[in-house]
Amino acid sequence: MKLFVTGATGFLGRAVVDACLAEGHQVRAMVRDPHHRLPEAVDAVHVGFEEGGRLREALAGCEAVLHLAGKVSRDPADAGAMHWIHVEATQMLLDAIKDVGKVRFILASTSGTIAVSENKRRRPARESDRPPFEVIGKWPYYTSKLLQEQEVMRRNHHGEIEAVTLNPSLLLGPGDERLSSTTDVLNILNRRVSAVTDGTVAMVDVRDCAPAFVRALTDGRPGEKYLLNGANMSVRVFVERVCTAGDVPIPKLRLPGKWALAGAKLLDGLAHATDRTPAMDPTSVEISNHHWDCDAKKASAELGFVARDPQETINGTVRFLEKKGLFRRV
Image (cartoon, rainbow, N blue to C red; front, side, top):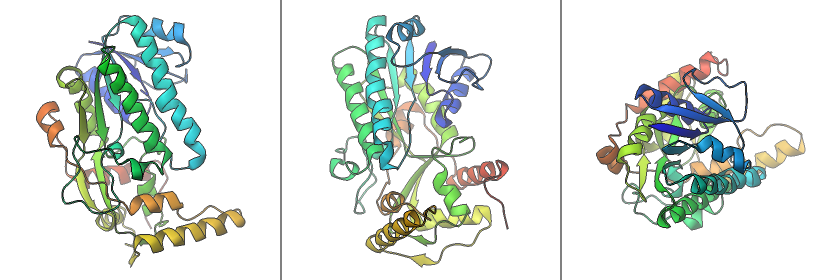
């Protein structure tokens, strides 16, 4: 199958491109940087979302689109940039596709458009659950991703595309060159997390997600969402596992959410007043006090999704960060 891939140079994108090539698919990748480091077998096309005519030319002949481009940030100042890439750029891409012909469209979203709550649930979240508007409305990243999903599904409903949405939880594993998903692990290793909150973490290995994206090209049901998650655990257990993998001391202090958030806001204000980098941004603390557990049974049954042991994922993430020189064992 001839594929058009956006976000091919990102953390998830590189893994998905490799998986597509391994299955014999032809990959045409949309790139911004002409000095990309994609495999030689990839047909790289330097084109922007706003270049309608050139984008249609790049899409010509492709049977499916894997839309993986995005921006992950917890900084409210990035709200505009995230809305542009997730919503406006997606609309431009879909408009270009409409002029080319009906294709299979695989969207990379996030479990956060489904699986986040302020209070511990009686069961992990499922694809059929109502989007938690009242929670994610506080965070521009998740808000823009939900709007993106809704636009894609609207086009699917109108018969313009055959859309399948995949919703990975926190992506970990080796290869995150831009630290788009592994910053939390790095902060723990560098002892920037001095206390743990009462929330839960859902995480998945990028190497386990990639095959599910390839399988979705043929077996994903149009109009459906698929959660991809490897493990659910408390923030405390997650921090302990990362510390153990990196041979760093485990934080002993445990703070209820309201106290942790208040402390983070105070330290953030002091840091900005003294032109220093805050130890932990308030948004990250707030996020860590929520519950992100979710269920990947649907993806396992329909897309053959299989998750490895979470400690293997954490160990691989730590080794990668250490190899990059971003963390040193004491």
